[in-house]
Length: 90
Image 1 (tube, helix red, strand yellow):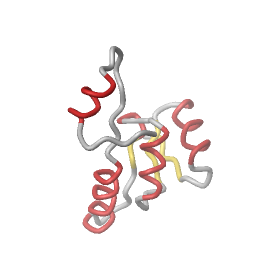
Image 2 (image 1 turned 90 degrees about the horizontal axis):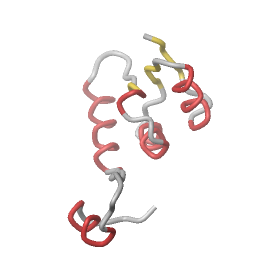
Image 3 (image 1 turned 60 degrees about the vertical axis):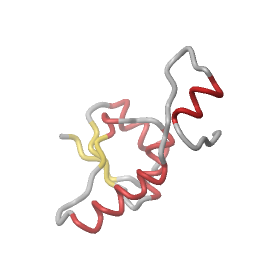
Image 4 (image 1 turned 90 degrees about the vertical axis):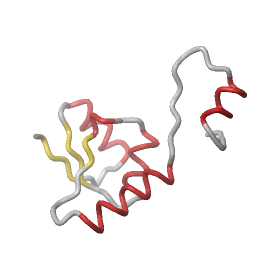
């Protein structure tokens, strides 16, 4: 996966015609750390918000291993990437 300094740089260099993902791994890590330190309950990631494989990997790397799933497809995604994940169907 290529790295860029900014979204402007992505647009300038790639000049995309179709939609692209810009994944900010440090932002994901920071958010995971904040929730793990400040939220008194179980921290779950709602897969429906962004099921991209790289995002799920970063969520797991950030210390979150519990996932709110809403479909069989989301279970398949999570179990492929994080086999030992706890899944909650809500």
